[in-house]
Image 1: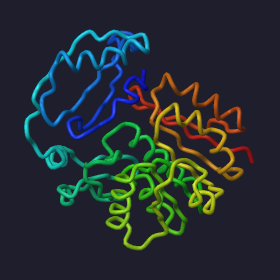
Image 2: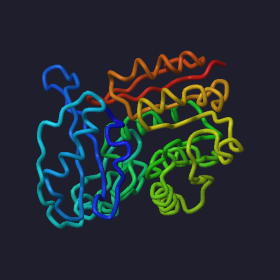
Image 3: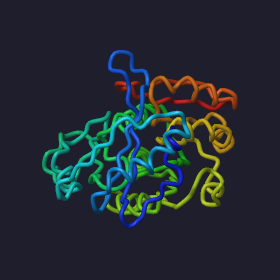
Image 4: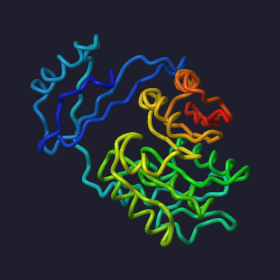
Length: 284
């Protein structure tokens, strides 16, 4: 179903496409999908339905309801920033620029304004990764760190706060995310060993040159985590650790199985509601 709208390209009229899985409230089982399309101008309902129907039929789905509503004009980035309180996760407090004077003492501050790149701290997957980094920092030092799919750069920044001497590479395949992450690194770490690169996967030259890594952070999605399990094992140094998230608890067994096939073992697991983060260790 996630490839439902493959080929449904964004254009001047269609600004964005989003898919949301609908779950049964009692069992949590998936029962359908919601598709949100954002247009610059109101689309014609009948024509839109005709365009959507073949995509649904191609995956055995049925278009049940089509609703068109105006989105109020609002600076959503500014509005979201003002609504977000500082987020606590272990030693870290992730906050927007509006909350600089609201920070609790004794925490490591990371300033990330809500924006176009994922990772402002409020999502359970980001919190779980930050907690995992906090726990790992109590156990050992890491010298080479990779943040794969870095989004806003929050995890790379957290790693640099814990291990200032570490060489850290943060990569994403989205140009906006790379720009945002680089800006956040400059804001939070005026002098650091964090490099932000546009890269898709482990085999980009910037990743190959910097590896192998003794810590890999990958807060992405279950399917790409499974697909990249072999590459993670190749680029994770013996005895290294990997923090994997962006997955639901029911997806964790498949992700873990894929990595076990390549010699990785579960060190610990962090659950936050329906979301899960896995900390894996490479064979020594």
